[in-house]
Length: 328
Length: 309
Image (cartoon, rainbow over all chains, first blue to last red; front, side, top):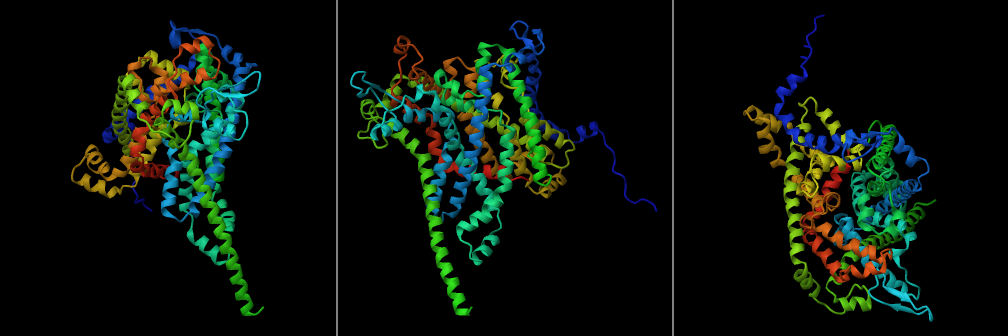
């Protein structure tokens, strides 16, 4: 039998470039920006294998092999402290940052009063619009402390403005805390701030997912006599599971990345507190000044490679769970 | 079981459940209301403190409802560092306006191009974009390249160029462009329109909501940016507003940690508590005013971004 279907004309790269020239031209500015700020710096990762000096620049400095890597991997306590902090902060951020937004989204679904719903949603979404610097400044109004305890009498003397939290503690008869000098509280503070900032944003994601649920399921459940609690327990939460899995996998892919903006914006240059909350990203930034470019580039390189491996793993896992639909 | 008994059991079941449901609803209202307050309270506190006299704050501490009201803090700020704040405002407005416009142009062009099926290498380009979000060179190489090759130190372009193109926003925009019916493009093509004409005359005008959504997201990120200033800017004349606030707050922060020697601490003149709160309000002022109008676009954008195609 004769073939009636014509084989598609094979057209090459050049033909495509010429034919759709304007389309490719439209991509040029964005691709140039990516080249300049994402791809060319990748070449700069070579610094990790050098003893960087300003005269030699990126490619002219002395090659030292894996010396930088062995230095921080072999028992550098500051580095491992930063890794540990990153994991702890991200872990709790992930747990609380999943539970709270889902709770909010489910509760939001039960709220029928339009004005109440609108106002409270606006309030919850607002922290997303604030930079970490602004949040740091606002936090100051809560935690600032100006007091001293008289050595002889043990009496508490207020020497200036005290933040909301200390006023509450004093009001309840307790001893106020010098928050900005006590490192031990700051992991908790940072985790709570992170969850607080993103809760409204993430609840919107879950609400969008819930809006797509099949309403007839709920109707059927109501007819069968299921209470709202039961509907939430046996319908809403199981149906949210795929979203939770995807978002969790995405977070796990980034578990070695700290939010430097958050740490730096809130804690800033407070050295007393910084050690307790320093993450890999801030450690890279501070060690850039103290340990040199080669050393800090090496840390960044390890972080990026670990990140890439984890993201690819997470993506493979997501595909398996999600019928071939990956994260990206 | 008789029918009557069955009905009555169902009835009592119904009543039990409706009471149960009322509880569910009450709990939902409480949780939503409580968390709403937790989000709103800090902001209200900041506003009221900025309108409270400094000595009242020092005596009574921070409180939500001030006993006295004053505009002194704001008059003080504008009398003493008005020029500096206005300059920072200028920098922030400039980078927000120029940056958002340039970002939108660059983002929309590439998003439009790779939204079209007729472009053969659209997936290659999408991958080139995507790869930067899963693998990056890290802070130091990026910093060295920016300062030594591009000369971005103390350059206002440092506050615009590195943040100009966001891959996430691009994919968001592409989703919107994909929703436009190709038949509209085909009609224009028959009339002899090229891709530039179609882009500017059809694709963009049909995506006003999308443009607002993505544009506002860019604008917010430029407005809130202090990070690039931390990296590249030493010249106080180029401080954006957020970084000006940062420089005030981080000074205070360092002194109250007790690490700074007492002698040095005495030399650093701390801005008063009220001044800090007032500068915070000045920094986020435009966001507060615009918030009721722009909020829904962000909600739309987040929903759009979270729904996978």
